[in-house]
Amino acid sequence: MLGVRRAGDPQPAKPTGDAGLLTLMTADGTPYMPRGVLQRDAELLSPAQQSGGRTPGRLAAEEAPMAGQASAWVPLILWGQALLLAAAALAWARVRWGRAHTWLVGFPVLAALALAVSDQAALLLPNLL
Image (cartoon, rainbow, N blue to C red; front, side, top):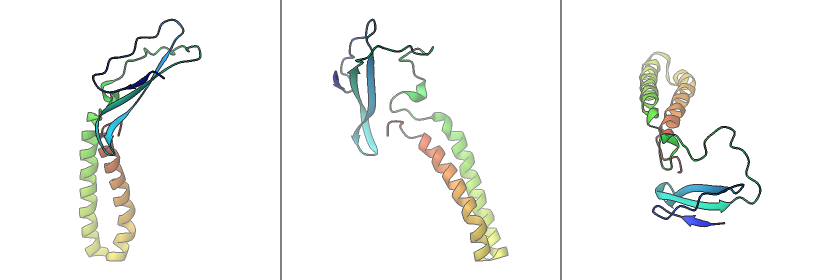
């Protein structure tokens, strides 16, 4: 175990030969209110394996520590509009069908749409949360 690093701490030396290095990252701070990234470095004790064609250490911008998926905004807005339209349609259906029938039809629809909205909203949160 090489130790714990926080933002601004020096990077460990790059491994050479058959040596390997593992870095684990997690959020630093109180639960659900991360302040930064905490990294734990460890040396590989067994021989290093081939990377399988991927270049180690290269991450997409959305996979960087504490990043969210900016591409989730459009689906979030669309699912939110579908949720509002379904709620309006069920308000109209309550007048036409009555409370019990509307509840029976509307609850699964609203639950599925609410789940889709919350799924897209979760993609906007920091990925180390």
